[in-house]
Image 1 (tube, rainbow over the protein chains, first blue to last red):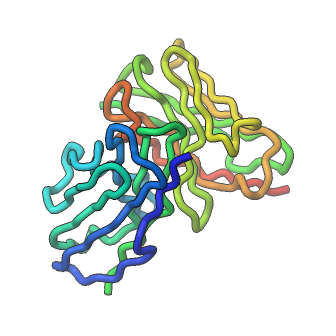
Image 2 (cartoon, each protein chain N blue to C red):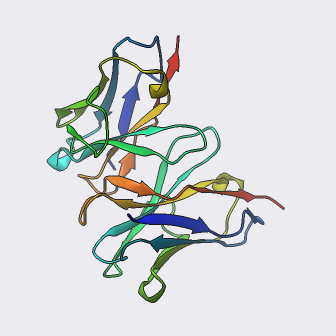
Amino acid sequence: ETVLTQSPGTLSLSPGERATLSCRASQSVDGNYLTWYQHKPGQAPRLLIYVASSRATGIPDRFSGSGSGTDFTLTISRLEPEDFAVYYCQQYGNSPLTFGQGTRLEIK
Amino acid sequence: QVQLQESGPGLVKPSETLSLTCSVSGGSISNYYWSWIRQPPGKGLEWIGYIYYSGSTNYNSSLKSRVTISLDKSKNQFSLKLTSVTAADTAVYYCARPRLAGSHAYDTWGQGTMVTVSS
């Protein structure tokens, strides 16, 4: 099983700042099939990025994904108040599909 | 636009079977992987398993002995059964569909249903 380790566990930043979230895989993710989700309390997760760097429909361009193999990054260029949430990475290049444990992005 | 809606009991007794249904509206259940994902209170997302339109399934190995996902094409629904539940199975359960046939990047989700395992 491919274990995804996200860091940091919690990130405290202010609106307008840049956020960098990391997702490291225990083995190379085939096809770079790595996705990022945003999850807010009481809501369903929202797909942000798929195949490591492609933005999903309707996602603002302040969200970007990068990386390949075992190291992936989600960057939010300038934080808006609505961006404070929990972010999960997920891989489906290797069976079984797995999620990271999440990074909580909180307002400083 | 495809919409998903979970339904089922919100309370299940320990050792019994949890049964949930996901109703698909606004589109066909064909040609996609249909997944169940859950989130225990205070924890992260956990993939439970998926079923393909053909009926083939794949389950999380940690749950495999207790999980069955099935498809009812005539009703445009798919279902989850989890046997011998314990308090550890208390969670919000989501059904989800990927953005493209053949993908597992999920862009369509149900609103989630809370299931509590308690006597």
